[in-house]
Length: 157
Image 1 (cartoon, rainbow, N blue to C red):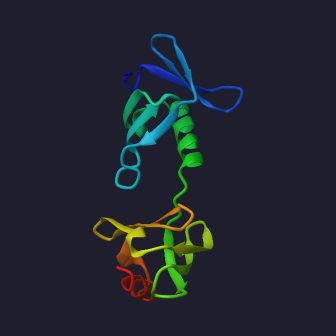
Image 2 (cartoon, rainbow, N blue to C red; image 1 turned 120 degrees about the horizontal axis):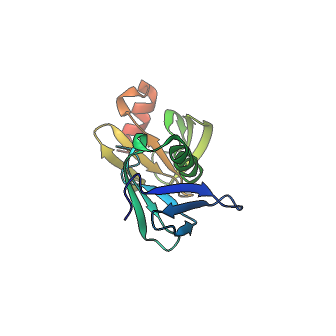
């Protein structure tokens, strides 16, 4: 496994990330994977080969050269989609499944909560809500929500 400085990254003609190891071997189709995407998104990132083998471990994204960091951030942004809920406007029912109208950091949307088990507590005050389409919505700080949103959410917790 390569150290943070033992490799280079580039993109191929198809836009895929390519890992170039110290041994000179190129590995196309590399995928960066965060170890702790919510708790520590800038720390602990593995670069995985197309066949699922770890090629490099990055302790801190900030320790990489600017170009490599930019390529990894672009790749992560393209593959990770987790809107953050800012406000819960309305729920259709307090029984599941229920349709929720929410305001997120990416705009207003509607999600369907299949069951209470789709609301997971990650840490004190942090929730992850999976909708019926498999999209994960994050509530980073439960106490930062407005009173109406907390009241609606409390009915499901």
